[in-house]
Image (cartoon, rainbow over all chains, first blue to last red):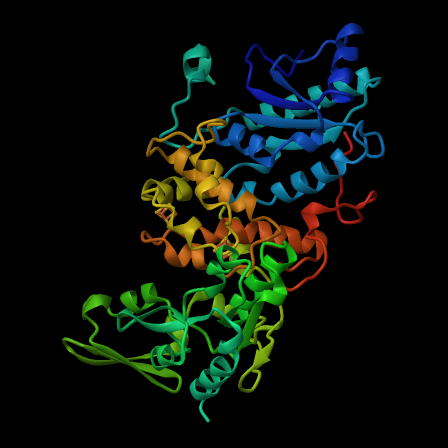
Length: 155
Length: 320
Ligand code: SF4
Ligand code: SF4
C-alpha cells in the first residue's frame, strides 16, 4: 500500500445504501485491500446527499470527500442519482472560489457487484488526496483531529 | 412627461386593483432612498425612481402572497419577480410589474471611497442628479461625481435593464450595458488560486458580525425564521464567531441559491461590513449557466436542479 506511507488522511465517503455501500462490502468480502483513510457514511441514496454535507466536511477540515452512488439508470429509487449528479456537478463550481482545492471532492458511481472497481476508486482517490496533502483548515477552526493525529505536525 | 410622472400615472392607474404598490421614496439620508409602500394617491408625492432606487422591492412579495400587489421594478428586480414566480413562491398573476428603463443605481460604498478625505457619506447634505453626473453638497463644498464611477458593479454587467416581464412598461427601452455576462470578475477572482482565496475568505469572514443582513435582503431567501442556520437539530452551524461557522453560513446561502440567484446583488449591498458575498453566488450562477444554459429569473420552465436528463451532454463524469 504505497499510497499510505504510514500516514493516514481523513477522507469522508458518502455512499448510497443500495449500490456503492454494497460495492464496498463486496470489496471487503473479496478481501481487496484498500487504503484505510476513507470514513464511510451510509446514506439511503445519492439523492439524499445534500451538497452541504460535502461542504460541511470540507469546511470542517476533511482532507477529501468522495460521493458514490448507483450508476445512472440503476438507482434503487429510479432517479435519485440523476438529481445528485446535477447538484454535485454544480457544487464543484464553488470550491475553487471559496479557496478549497476542487480535487478534494469527487463523485462517482459504483454498483454492488463492482468490488474491484470500488477498490480502484478508493485507491485512486486516496492517492489523489495524498498528493494534495492534508487540508489546511480555515483559521479559527477547532480541529479535533489534531488531537487524534499526533503526526499532524510532521505531515 | 418625465419618467417620474409616467410612473406615477401608471401606479395611479393600477392602484384601485391592488393592496399596494412597492416603489421607492425618500430614505434616511440624501444618498439613500427607502422602499415605499404606496397605498393611496397621497403616498405618490414621496415616490421617485432613479439612481437611488437601490432596494429590490421583490423582497417583500413572498410574504404578500395571496393579495394583489404592484411593484415598480428595475431590470434586476423584475428578474427576482420572474424567479419567484417560476418557483411558485409568488403567483405571477397576483403581481403587477411596472417596469422602466433603469440607468443604473448608486453604490454608497463607492461614494464613500470617492469622498475619502472630504467627508463621510452621512455628512452629504443633498444629492442632485444632473444627467450623467451627481452633485453632492458636502461640508467642504460641492463635489461632482460621474454616475458610472459610483454605480453598483452589477450595473456594469447588466444585460436586462428593462424589466423583461413587465405588465406595464413606462419610457423607452434602453440598450443593455453588455450583451452577455461573461463572469470575468469571477474568472479573475478564481485565478488568484485556492491558497490566496482561502486567506481572502478567512480575512473577510473574520469581519462578519453574523447579522444575517445578507440573508434578509435576499428576495429568494424565503425560509426566514426557518433558516437551517438557526436550527439546533440538525446543528449546521455553531454559535461561535469563528471563521468556519461564519463562512459556513455563506456556503449555505450560496448553495441554497444555486440555480436560483439572479445576481441582484442585494446580499452584498446590505452587508454592513462590505464583505463581497456575492462572489460565491456568482461562482455558482456561472456554473449553472455553463452547464444548463439557465439564467435565473429570465428562463422559464423547471429550474435546472429540480430536473435532470438521463444523459447529460454537458457533464463529463470522471472515468476512474
Ligand atoms: S443571493 Fe444575493 S444576488 Fe442572489 S438573489 Fe439573493 S440577494 Fe440577490
Ligand atoms: S451581512 Fe455581512 S456581516 Fe452580516 S451576516 Fe452577512 S456577511 Fe456577515
